[in-house]
Image 1 (cartoon, rainbow, N blue to C red):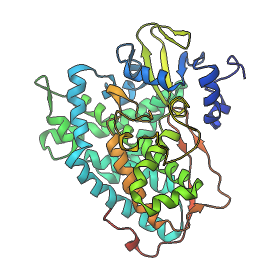
Image 2: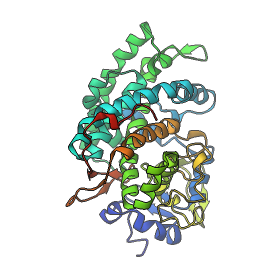
Image 3: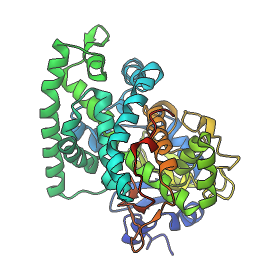
Length: 413
């Protein structure tokens, strides 16, 4: 497989990226993709270097990749005092007492959605539960009406497509921008209303906060809201599906977690390492940079291949094996900036929602695993993952012993 013939944009790569990670790390650790005019890095230490050296590798590329559909700058584009102040407001909504309150809402939300599915003894966990749950959870955080979840999900799909497409046709570009405009038109009046009548939600916190003595404009608040929605929704439903898939594939580990739910954080962390839902993180080289003897020119777009970095034998022992008991996982720090895996990014722009993502998946899994007796893949169903930038199961069809009573879904942990 000569590098000149290999393409990350090919159908072969899209079908099973993990088959090519080892080859990339060994033979093309700095792979240039002419069609995207971008460089792809696959080694753990190179990816960590790019994500932590903010002067040499900026988030300037997001002006083109994200800002048009986010309707303004996103957190990852900000630096200095502005980044610190605005990030702090958002982080506060995802940690501490606010997070405890959200866990109660998450659990009630999950019980409501799960009860009818569990009674059937068969469900597509991704489409019937994961996607609606992730959107509703994100709306709850912002204090938005969860009855709107289907419309919001449609708009967010357009925003997500724009941000995560490595190449985009002019028609799709126009369609995505239109959907982003509709989402902004939906959110802007809500921001104005919260400005006049603030509550205890994240939108009100953003509306009433001042930066350098000046309140944020409606457009700035909308941009941060869309930022939170995309970040909360995109990875969550994928991670839940992937977690269940890996545990069913490894019955002895599934049995371990069922016996001891305190192993859940490790199972989630290993899922994030083994199959990170966000596979690509873009940066822009601010000056010429050398990796493995290849010079990436100043101004170039650099994509960090998170999936490949997370399976680098230089960072993890036997990395192509799913093992929630692995000693080099560091489960306790897997949801912090000190994580060894890079699924949340790292450094200054590490994902603000890492603690929330953990709470969300953990809450649902703690409800699901005890309830799903004799869980197995539905006979005849096929399993397929899609996505180059964000990746996850298209569906996850499961059979299990029907749950006759909602008493199996406790509200306590």
